[in-house]
Length: 360
Image (cartoon, rainbow, N blue to C red; front, top):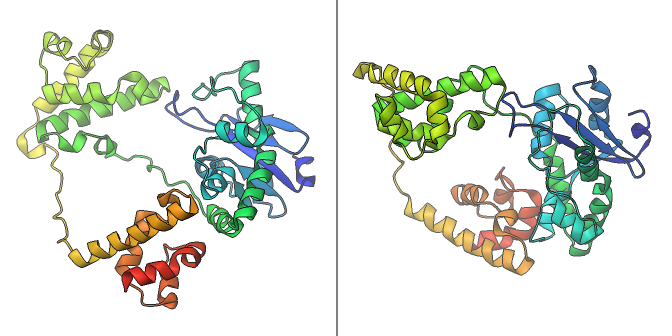
């Protein structure tokens, strides 16, 4: 880190293990300068504050590819905040690149072919095999060259200011994950809210059981048993092992391994009185506003036309949430448009006149 701090810029990446572990955390940090790459093992080093100092140093530019998640977990695990960022994924989106994955961009701009076999590897294992170390190092070794190529492309397109504004907003990214002790996680599983009350009670019991097992064994929950299997058990409410085995969504091996626990969870739900079943509060939808919907559609049409002309994905040029904010505010002029907090300055510059005309 002492050597890195003498450099004007560095490339940074992290590796986690949410695909494998219940307790996700950073298991590797990669940092590259123009001529060296270091792999830092957070499990072996008690004090990582020098890394945090580099990230916070406004005198050093930090290049990430798709920084959002890295910045969130660095904030969550260590309270590290980053200043002066360049994100090659954002740069590629604004440059109108059709493929924005790191491997595709490195092959196109740097002639480097990345291996892909370790994308979902277990970075918590120790020791890390040489092939995984090489893979991790490659993620940042060529990132500064890619950054320079994309900066040149953005400058040629007259869009470097767009990217600079987006990079500035990344500095405010913080961890916003589920709070500890959260008891409504089962409701966030796709399909859960469509279950009738008794089945929803069973799913709550099953989800709670799976979380307990996953935490005990430090496994990602889906590696204990998948959501589809739990939902199927909840819908069927089986009372016997034979009924459990008959569910096509539940693999026979999991029925054998976890059958007793699954049946016990269902039995607890079946025994609940009606008054204790979970019931979702249904909020009435706000009445339709045809004028608002029409404004959104007009704004969307303008946005789509300009996106095609600029060869940028429509959602990259201006997302629907931002268009809805503009439609809601219905500004009459540039000054009013500037008051719409969701709209970036560069978006107002590029789209402003067309949006105002559409509203008129």
